[in-house]
Amino acid sequence: MRRLGPILLIAAAATLPAAASAKPLRGAMNGAMSQAGGYSGAYVVNLTDGRVAYSLRAGRPRILASNTKLFTTSAALARFGAEGTLGTEVLGAGELTDEGVWRGDLYLRGGGDPTFGSRRFARRTYGGGATVGQLADALEAAGILRVTGRVYGDESRFDSLRGGPDSGYAVSSYVGPLSALAYNRGLASEVGFSFQSNPPRFAAARLDAALARRDIPVRGGPRAGRAPDAARVLASVDSPPMESIVRLTNKPSDNFFAEMLVKDLAMQRYGRGTTIRGARLAAAFARRLGGRARLVDGSGLSRGDRASPYRVVRLLRAIQRREEYDAFYRSLSIAGRDGTLRDRMRRGPARGRCRGKTGTLWNVSALSGYCRARSGDVYAFSFLMNGVYPYGARKLQDRMVQAIAARRG
Image (tube, rainbow, N blue to C red; front, top):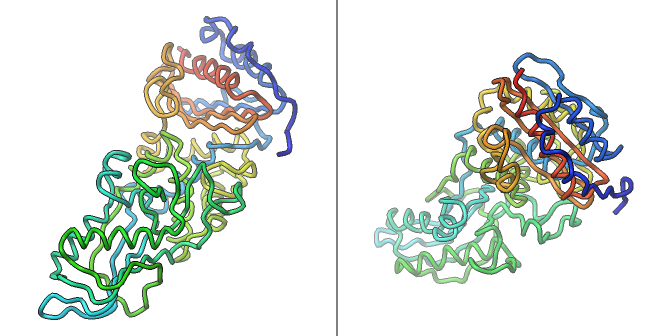
């Protein structure tokens, strides 16, 4: 990897005086930014009165890391709506006899739902989600008692690339295998860490097993395959609403969800999901709002995802005026309380007052979001730090957010 500059050992951040948040904002910001170094930028706007509260090297694009998810999730909310869902279907090519025999094949076709899987896994991991058991129940309710063909897993709504650009589009250990028919995040077992080698066939086998548990035998073994055009929908199940999916993406900074969402953007627009097209759609949405960025994936794992602090705040400011703002705002981690900010800013004025999206890569650390200051004014901020030691950079960012939250006028 090409280094952007010398890594700054900013452990001295921990020695900033505890009263930093009481200083005038500019002084507190300058003190922290001087330690962050010349490869870092910051931008803060008072959204209540529209004034720029702080700016330093704010126009230079920086590596975003997981701040990329701000672009991905805001675009997903805009395209699908807060209540929009992603569907998984079972289609049939054949006919149902009066005796309940389905003469033909079944096709489990994925619609890019990152929550799809088993009931136990979805409940434990996400608090709920679409399940293969629900589809099996629906097929049983439709009167199917036996299948003469086989179950196929159809992932044709996405391309077949399993990863993003950071892994050469192969499976990444930081993401898992991407598929329009992802089952339990692509994990080979509910309690393991190995990945499925063939996600559509794996999911087809899970539906086959779910039908067997309902005493619905399927003659042929499960395979991967695309549903024919003449196949008709026999059963379907919807994901949780997009508001929930975006929250599950941003609060824990979930790379798998983000990469699925960026493909979902392209699937909804073009009929087939690809990372490249989805990233372009997310960038185009942000550009229309003034948040110009270069995006190549949905999660920020690639160092090619870049934007300036100024443009990130432009995006945050524009989203505040949109109908999906409440869903977007609730998806961000709360300082000192949950998500990736649970263990940061657990004391001081920022706790509970500020929400943000973190980002970390080798020598990169980012934090952008919103703060309601003690004055009642609302601020949007973006701190993009490159060429830094991430742990020390987080200390600096926390001091800067505390200074914003402490504002009384």
